[in-house]
Image (cartoon, rainbow, N blue to C red; front, side, top):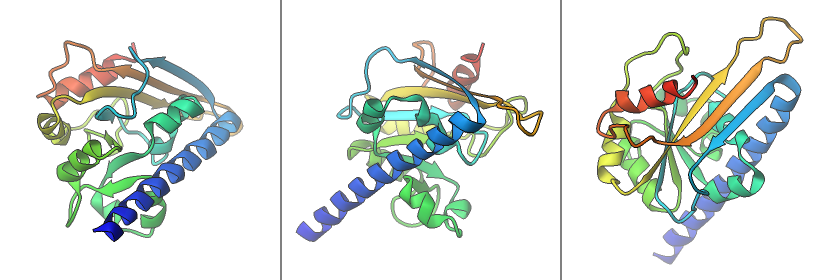
Length: 208
């Protein structure tokens, strides 16, 4: 039992600092290659002791670390570690180690996966991050929204729901620095947390 607790603590620390390092790395990269536009509209500071579920649209493979590049280092430490639900076929590939290191876990399979994994991590001092669309989607070509986020919220009705809108503007010239827009905000009161489409509508609606 003691060994199991120790291993969980080691994993927690490993994921926390692995995630923080990846965010700092992408933050440095975006300063060179992107014109960043950060907009943090949270009603109160992030509380590391509060069960927190985060949902976002999904455009690129860099989204997991990129979304948190909008936060200050102290905010990043408070929100870390974060666990990202990731497509199981992508997670169980040659990218498994870096994905694991940065907090990803598979959407399907044995053990802590999918909704059960997201609930477990949210209850055990991680923040659970979900891309409700389940795949990378162009902002002008929205796809079906899955109900994983709704199932998680049903099991954690007291959780704080934070929404993120991310937009990687396309590079039109080789040496241009197109905008990277990242917006954090609390789920509006009108959002129906039993409807995944309502949640995604709030995310996309925030870009206006």
